Amino acid sequence: MKSYDKIIAGFVLVFAVISGVTNLFLQFNKTNNTGLYKVETNRIVQELEDGNEINADNYQTIAGVSENQNDNFYDSENPYVIREISGKLYRIEYKEEIRSNSILYPANVILILLFLTVSGVLLYIRQAIIKPFYEISELPYMLAKGNLTVPLKETKSRYFGKFIWGLDMLREELARSRQQELERAKREKTAMLSISHDIKTPLAAIKLYAKAISGQLYSDAEKQRSAADSINARADEIERYVNTLREKLIGDFMEFHAEPQEVYLSAVIDGIKGYYSEKLKSLGTNFVIANYTDCLLLCDPERIEEVLQNIMENAIKYGDGKMIRIDISEEEDCILITVSNSGCTLPDTELSHIFDSFWRGSNVGNHHGNGLGLYICRRLMNEMNGDIFAEIRNDTMRVTVVCHKFS
Image (cartoon, rainbow, N blue to C red):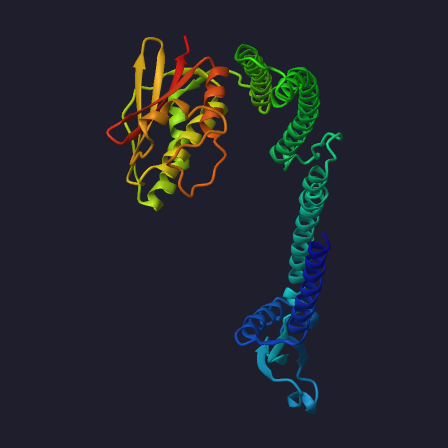
């Protein structure tokens, strides 16, 4: 804000200097009147022939008009011409140079109008754009600090409508995420306390049987076998508790929401094409999108794009960078979008696990990741009543998204 005010102050200063220099130039600059005095002299001769009185002030180049009435007729400080009019001699004095005062007034009017126009524009930009933006520039910092309760208001100028709307959506999403995180933490803590309490009983039994066996309280083999079976049963019970806890934690760590609606297949494919064409071209990857017939899909446009982007990123990350291809086919009332990449090194035995959460294949190498990309894809497709599956053909990974057609 202060920087922009300095720009305005600098403009005013520069304009003042330009105006002063212009006025000084027009005040002191003289222009030659060659030709103009002759025109005005002829006008004066015509006026005198018509018997009219002459006033030199009405002429720009004429200094005076005198009739031959004394001996000083030919003495003058100014250059002059002599004309005989109606039998009388007249001395018409003229000025060799004239001041350019005639353009001084309009020049100043133009300068003032220009100054007012530019100043008005600069002040409008300050009040309608710079000042509101300065005020909302603090909002990301407030959001980062966790101030999520106050809604964001649009300015009257509405220049930042989409920006404000986006920030407010971010605020709402952060507030929702925080609330979900608190609820999730509460559920997890409750689950942990419940499971830990349930585990105490079989754990105590295991310790008791182990102590008895260690103390040789069971003398015959049958009692020892029975104690071992009891330990094994309690261990199975603990394992069930642990699996229950694991499934609960995995099921709750992410929440998904999708709003299926009608969207053109071409809009989905064009979005992916626009996002990845230049990127893959710079990587030297041959990116092909097969011909297809446009139709309406029943899906969430943002979520289906998220799914395809996750698949594309995996194709870039784990393929050999030679080829990525998108094929579209139709089966009954569904559209199948298949993303293929060459250079697949994933073993067939691991294919069934790629949609599990936190699972990463043996082909990950040095690539960073958390094993959630395809898990998220599956959850999102389930939310849209669709499906996703993968297969490997001739060292080519093929991941297919199944979407219902809108009917």
